[in-house]
Image 1 (tube, helix red, strand yellow):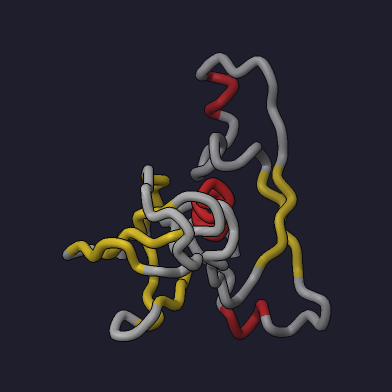
Image 2 (spheres, helix red, strand yellow):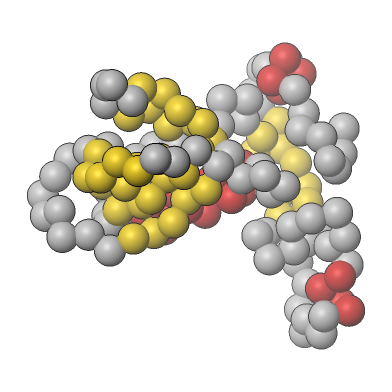
Length: 134
């Protein structure tokens, strides 16, 4: 399956040791249906991205905020999304967008919800904080 479809979880579950995908550009800069557009836009270098495919797509909030954001984008280059499990009453939600935000939360535990928003929340990461939009 290629653009614009994701490989269904039922197919991703078949390989015993997982599967990999090769994207014909460096992600996230070259995401989208036409990675060659980077040439037209004047890029001086090109690349490719080899990444592991994962049926679960779950973010680990113990990782640094910058890593969480990169993983959310890499998990689905068309419509970045991933699952994250937050403390009750929020529970498991699908995240569509991740932003790194400043925090003064100090020594709170990763995964602690710092603020709630109508479309998500700000959560403590392993280093820093992320605003998760669902």
